[in-house]
Length: 254
Image (cartoon, rainbow, N blue to C red; front, side, top):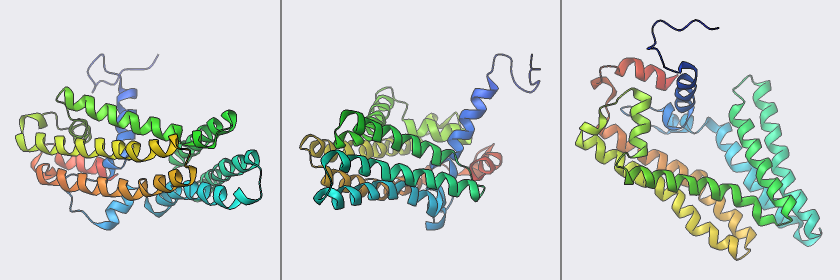
């Protein structure tokens, strides 16, 4: 049996809570402080640095290139195999690079698993377009979660940032509620615009156009939404004004 932490109230689940907190702090929003002055360098760090951006863009770009180039000389089945295998090989290479550089590999592993699942869906159904189904599911989940949080009047971005900086009273501040509302709508828009643009291309079997739009609406749009979210939150959440601001800021920057 483990000895309870005397500094924690009984009944808490410290392992789960701490793991969740650490995961959120490693997320894009968790790496920037709401009151911090925005800069391109910090935004780049929040998106995982140059390597993180390359990891996000290259697999889809490689899929698009391989699928387009091999169309003139490979059979449909071989074309599918090469198009879904190439991104998986690159994802494995990213894991190796991170291991060699002694960097955190979890992001790369999750990326590989996503690519593997997407490729598996395409391969086992013999339909190249099913490579995009997992992305549709993720964007759909974003839309549903954001919409439900708005319906229950607990804007998801406000709940998330409040958790990250230890602010449980943000709903009592009208300005903070408005910022959380607008920010949550922005992320709902992110998922919705992707689905609105990409699903019709999926239904029309326009694979090349679908992969192209996935690139355009991927990292570039994500960066814009993240930047706008940051600008919004720094107008109402100023870390030094919070009682736990100093310690929270240390956690966010870690």
